[in-house]
Image 1 (cartoon, rainbow, N blue to C red):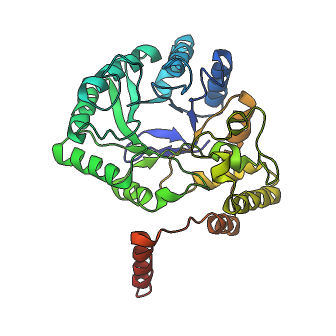
Image 2: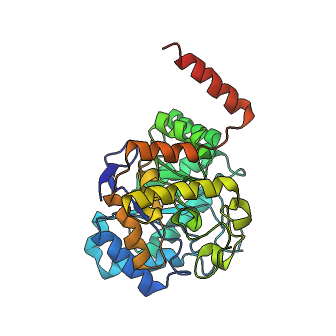
Image 3: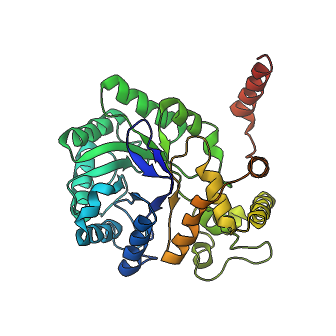
Length: 344
């Protein structure tokens, strides 16, 4: 895999990261360790998890599985960029969630213990916390960086104004500044291009997209006439998450899926690789997060690193997946920007 710099740092990461939300739920420990082994053998070095993974089952299991994998081969630790997150509720004891200074420090200690390491390379706020002033959150993250327990900080699932306020506040206060954003981003979900992508480009944050295949939609697992069934996320729960079948079963989705299939046919590869290559090449994107239940699934998706899209193919995919611009203020701003560019 090719390597890229992570945000405005000197840290080099592989162009595809490994997401581990499946560990402990959809992938048991032997399967998870095999997935990690194959990822590293393929040249990958960015492993992402969270304290609340898996979403169903014992919280922290994903970190524990990764920790036992690292313990088996401690020499690997220095070559792995290990990322995790805090914010979600870990238990019902009270004060075990959010982005308060008290909880962030406790959550970090828990993650370090489960991962069996003395530091986290990238520690991320999993989501904005409206109950905690961002200044308090940044103080806590900065304390962890200065203590050596965390190397860099990042954020996930922030809106444009939340991201900008966080970065500017950190700079004004002289605290550690986020280096990355982890948002939902794929050919079906391009709304981050309205504000978040420009903010990341302006502030120098690397983008680590989750859900790059839209829970299987972009791998052509589903058809117009057949609802998802079987051992897929939507097959097991068609109403699951942002890519729920009833939400995505619209004409725009099928136009995009058809276009991806057409390009895949031209290249002689599975559709998933086309969708992943398109995303990896988007402005600001550092490394899409690949989730996998099996080594075979991961192996197939990692081969997206070996293909290239022609400019005409990329233009076709851009056009068919272009999101509808909301009337205000985005449409007005887009029209004004177009008029301004015409003067240049």
